[in-house]
Image (cartoon, rainbow, N blue to C red; front, side, top):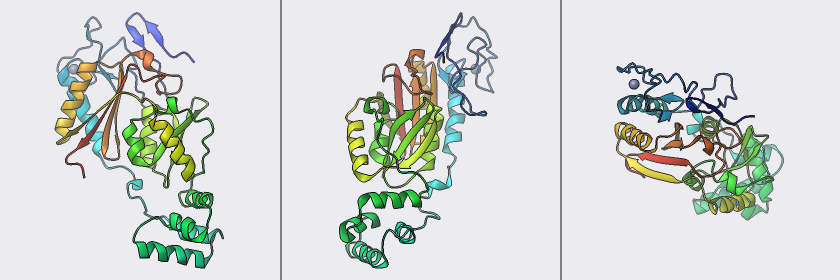
Amino acid sequence: MPLLRFGKTGVVPPQHVIGSERETLWSEDGARRVCGNSECAGGWTAPWRSRRRPIFEGQWGCCGRCVLAMVRAAVQRESVDGTADDVPHRHRVPLGLVMLAQGWITQSQLRTALDAQRAHGTGRIGDWLVAECGVGAERVTRGLSVQWNCPVLTTEGFSPEAMALVMPRIFVEEFGLLPLRVAGSRILYLGFQDRRDSSVALALEQMTELRVESGLLGETQFASVREKLLGCEGVPVKSGNVEDLDSLSARITAALEQKQPVASRLLRVRGYFWLRMWLEASALGRSGNLPASGEDLMDYVFSIGARA
Ligand SMILES: [Zn+2]
């Protein structure tokens, strides 16, 4: 697959469309350059205009004001509250009952674990089953995979250097999930510690334009992969805290105007707004929108309001 096409108007990256209705990150027609702001007063379609960047979500903005309008619309879109998975335990059968139903633990083991959890007022039921009842940790992981209806993944093919570029390390540090590998240049495997989070998986699908398959990792594997991942250099990231959505839009617009990316994308991931910018077309790797290296790539991660 050709990664880039060079036309007389400059670099026109290809469309990385994997779904039929998927919007693409890259400008569809670099030659036409119609301003992406629907309210644009300038009516700039002029190909002779020297300003070619920044490109935000596949659209070109003719001036700073128009980029701000495009960013505002994207911020608005991302602010709308997401999926039901934001409510973590809704409709989930408790892990103990799942394992009991599978015949992997006995009533008395479950009672012992629940008593221990109650007595200590802390800890996950799975940990108590392991600690107090001699249940194998891999059995608890299997129980979680039934509870969350997703497979148990292996760490086979894990490349820490490549996976460290998938998302900002703060997500790895805070979210209990790890990018594991890309299969066939199309599927990104995401390993979770103890529960699947479809909203994060969806955000990563949109950012990478790869299909994301979620699964659980055993505790030991998770810890070891996490350590290796955090030991690698990721994409350079700037983080900031802003007061409200207006200042967020202003900060993002300023970043776009300053860095002049050839492609960029804004997504909300849990409490964060994540802006990824491809500063040169060569930043694009072989799989979806994943970078080949941290070079010519930049992440901004913003949180809003006082952090708890
Ligand atoms: Zn405009």
